[in-house]
Every structure is written in C-alpha cells, then in structure tokens.
Amino acid sequence: MASTGQKTAKYIFVTGGVTSSLGKGIIASSLAKLLQSRGLSVTIQKFDPYINVDPGTLNPYEHGECYVTDDGAETDLDLGHYERFLNVRTSQANNVTTGRIYYDVIMRERRGDFLGKTVQVIPHITDEIKKRMLLLGETGEYDIVITEIGGCVGDIESLPFIEAVRQIKFELGENDTLIIHLTLIPYLASAGELKTKPTQHSVRMLQEAGVQPDILVCRTEHPLPPDIRRKVALFCNVQVNSVIEAMDAETIYDVPVLMRKERLDQRALYMLDIYNDQDVELDAWQAFVSKLKNPTESVRIGLVGKYVELHDAYKSIVESFIHAGAENECKVNIEWIHSESLTPENAVDKLAELDGVLVAPGFGERGIEGKIAAIRYVRENGIPFFGICLGMQMAVIEYARNVLGLEGAHSYEMDQSTPHPVIHLMQDQKDVTNKGGTMRLGAYACKVKKDTLAHKIYGRTNISERHRHRYEFNNQYLKTFEEGGMLATGINPQNNLVEMVEIPAHPYFIGVQFHPELKSTVMNPHPLFVQFVKSVLKYSLQKRAVMH
Image (cartoon, rainbow, N blue to C red; front, side, top):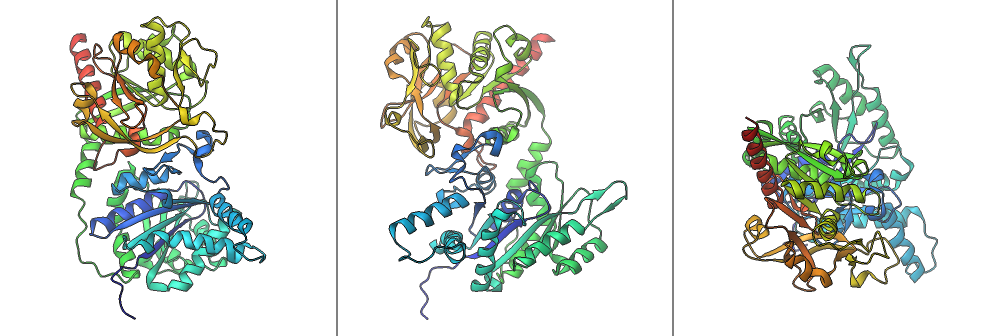
C-alpha cells in the first residue's frame, strides 16, 4: 500500500483502580511531558464516565472547577493539568463524557441513521467511544495520544469505556496500544508492611473485562522494595520493570522528574516499539521546580470566594499563583476566606494582615456582600487587588456605590429591580433558557489601552483571553465611571464590551472579566498573576520596612 505520508499515532490508555483521586491526570501529564521532552508530539484526552454532557452545569462542590478551552468547551479540570504541563492548547475533542456519547448516539437514532436497527451499548455506544478515542490520533498531528479514563475500574459507568479500550487493543495490536493502570499499595501501620492485595484485585477486575495492563504505576507512601515489585509483577501478569513506583511527592511538579527516575517513558517507548535515542530535556522544568522549592521571600494573599472549602474549585488560580510565585522567587501563601463570613465590620480583622487580595469568580447571590466588603477595604487601604470575572463585577458595584454615589447599584443577575444595573445581562444572552454551554465561552480578543497598568502588565495592545460569563459591564455607565476615576483599560474590539478595569489612583487595583488563570502554564506563567505577585511582594516589603 502506498504511504500517505501522514504519521499514525500510537495510543496510551491510563486507567485507575482501588480508589479515585490517585492522580491519573498527573501521571498522564507527567508521562506526556517526558515524551514531549524527547521531541515527540503528544496530546492527552479525558473520558469521563458521568452522564452530564459536560461539567458546565456541575456545582463546583461536586467536581471542582470547570476548565474552559480556547474553542469554548467546558471541560474537566484535568485538562488544566494537561495544558499547564505540556504548554499546548486542548480543545472540545480532548474531553468526552458518557452523557455526550449517549446524546450523540440518541440524536443519530432519532435521525434514522441506524436504519431501524436495535441500538445497543455494544456495538453502538462502544463504536462511538472508539471513534472519539481515535479522533485526535487520526489528524496526523501527534505521535502519541494519551487517554485518561475517569473513575475507577469496577464502576458500572466505566464499563463501556473499558470495553472500548479492549476492542481498540485487539484491533490495533500490541505495538500500537499501551495500557497503564494506576493503583494503590497501602501501608498498614499496625502490621508495619505494604499490602499488594488491593492492587491484585484491581488488576483482576480489569482482566475480567478482557484488559491486561502493560504497566502498573503504584501510588505509595513508602518505597517499593524489590520483593514487593516482584510479587506485584507475578500476581498481576506484568514484567518486573513494568512495576513503577509513584511515591507521594512534595508538589505535583516533582512527578515528571520522579517518573523519569523510574524510567516510565523508556518503558512506554519500548513497549510501543518506538525507537527514540533523544535525551529527556527537563532543564527549564527543573529550574522552575528549584525556584518553587527555594523561595527567597513569602507573601500572604487572601482568596475571597464562596467555594473555599473545596480548593479544587479554584484549581487554576492556585496553580497560577504557584507559577507566578516561582517566577518572582516568592512563596505565595493563600489565605482562604469565605465571602459569606465577611462583613464591613469584620473586614479589618480578616484582611488587615494580608499583603494582597484576589476576589474569585463565581455565580449567584450567595456571598456577594462579603466580596464587596473585601473590595472596599482593600481599595480604601491601598492593598493590592485583583478581581477575576465576578470579582471584577463586584469591584464595579463597590465603586459605583461607595465612590460614585450610585445608591443601590448592583448586578442585574442578583437584583433585577436595582435602580443602577451597572452589571447587566449580555445582549446575546437575553433569550437563552438552556443553562448548558450557552454562556460567552472560549477565547476572545481584547484591545489594551496604552499608558495603563494593563498595558504595562501585558506589554502589548492586542491580547486574547478565555471567558465564561453571562453578565457584563453596562456601557451606559462607562462615562460616569471614567470621570469618577475607574477606567476601562481593556475593550473587546468586536462589541465594545469592557474586559478590564483599573483605578490609576490606587497602588495596584485591576479587575478582568475573563479568566487569565486558564492560560497560565509552568513554562509561560500568566503576566497578570506574575505582576500581581510582584506588586504584593513590593507592598509586603514596604509594610515590613515601616514596621521596623
């Protein structure tokens, strides 16, 4: 057969067993990073077994943050890890849920595509899953596609995905597919030993579904001695050097280095029959980890939000602070402040000791007045402020009420009878009734005004940032705000929406309608976070100098 010249991808599947939250996403991202650093082009996708069509309508308490891609897909937060580790953009194709699979198959059945046949899980659902799993590999862009299967082996909802993996392995053959199973080897303190039985059971469950793992990555709190590795290999039907130790790490950014020591990438390449003699190049990555672990200064930044009990609800913000902290050689200590606990009366007790405050995104009325109280306090006391999405909107409301004298100013989202709707529903959102995937989503252009804080931060006038919102700054009030000292310094060139506001009279006060945290990566920390941490550090050093 004549060659088309298009390269054919190889596929790695990452499954998990014993318990959830073992870190499949981090292992997948770390392996991808190692393969990428050897000069291979790699992408990662996540298949989630829940029935929601996407995470866009899920409560953050249920699922952590909803990560948004450039093309406007609302996806699982693991895609954030993929982008942060690989420094490449993901898309709609990188995250698929059971809900999306069933939705598409049912729509095809309604159209009559199956010509009246009985539609079944096998082959129709599994065929749709396989099609999606192979999609990115058929573009010719990638050498390797890593697919993370969400959930745990043995879960009823994961079965169709595992069956699809079995079929792909059978159809493509040994050298084009690799199955990595992430499992747990717990340490029983009372017995003083590591226990392999949970791993054996997990692998047996996978084997019952017709899938034999090629590599076992074993999460553990203690090093795996050679006899334990041999025992796992023997009982789980894998080679001893395919039993990989994954010790608990100080930071997720250590994991690629640990996996390199365990030769996970070499093992994967050998089993996929890929010859690659290029050395792993992790110098820049290790420089970042070194700066992260050896800061010369530290600051305290208050993160004011209403989902602070679950830190994963703000995962990308937390990671952006880690990237920006390392860039400034400064440890960012986040103080989690529940917006419902804040009032104008107690703001001084909760915020006075902080070096900076970030008011986080969110939806709905709960905790709004607390966010406004926090913003008033930092604005009046010259503390560095950064507001994201709803955080920017609250800054606008606070300024309207307490500086411009617009009594009762509010967002139309919270109060539809407000006399001053300084934040209003976007024109194209007025007739929307469905909640899923209907917001302003994905990357949009923004024009930054010269001689502003925003321009100093970005160093250019044309930028693109990701959005996820329904409400916007009400341009009817723009003149009033600008005359009153709050400037709109970033504008969408297509529809004149206000994307950034700042107060030049304040040492550092900026609010943005978009989500810069979604674009920060290890190799490219986001300038808004870098400059915010820099200003917070400057404020902290000045404060300490005055005290001494």
